[in-house]
Length: 371
Image 1 (cartoon, rainbow, N blue to C red):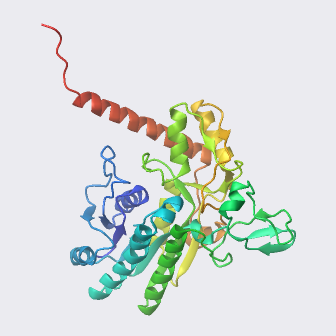
Image 2 (image 1 turned 90 degrees about the vertical axis):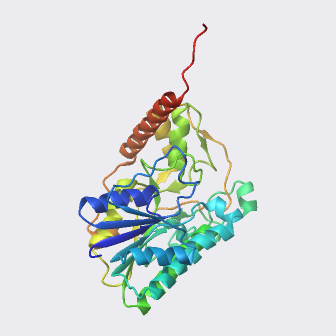
Image 3 (image 1 turned 45 degrees about the horizontal axis):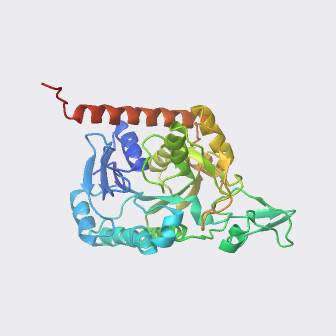
């Protein structure tokens, strides 16, 4: 299959959007997806173009991989299939390691059995691999220890410099910022990077690793609590409920709209790496959780967000990235401002609610009046 792409996890949020983008310019696209119920609920249809070949399979199951590679020999593979969720990974470590780590090794072993070396492997990695990332206190740059449970209980939110001085987070940049995972999910994503890099080097093929920041937008699961704070805030604000903001509200994230992420992945496919590369994909604009909550509540005319002081073990204080290397190497640039993306997400949520209401009304049994 010339100009063909296999997308693992391709029926999900990012994968289905990427598949649609690839089809528009003539790629032959196959999707491998287990259709996990945590992602694919009964009322959320699989949104793939008719020309996309959907191959139902589990990335941890070798026979499924062998069957997929008998049906297609893709020129590029985009590896999106993964278990997500920082807090969830702490209590379901085996599940995350099985899908993210073993699923990746099964991919590589199946390629070896099939004697097939793609022109490029593309991995959707995560900003989580950096952990707390690099911070700066005065002129000193340091990597803080993970925040302990006791520290969070005491409300000590920010890492402190070596002399207990105030410190500020720095934007992460692959090749400059050291990856230091502090939760199981992050560790499995970094393991994926290492596994693919070793195999790609040994087989003289190319690897593009894109470390994604917090992705949001239409198509995101609204029932899976592990897929992101943006969808959760949007759903609650539409219901006119107060948004609970964790810690002191000054957790920092980089929220990047789905279309910008798809364009970055598409650019990596269109411009294959000539040597292994690792790039950060985000909006390039840091936003606090409190700022996010205020924007969502304002758009929905919902009650004022409440800073509640709760926390999640394994969460990092700040995550943001430098996107200049991605701009230069991929000829890519994010186009969606946060408010614009939030409004589009909220419009889509409203459309989904109307669709479910119309479907339920159509399916409801007809009531007979008294005789």
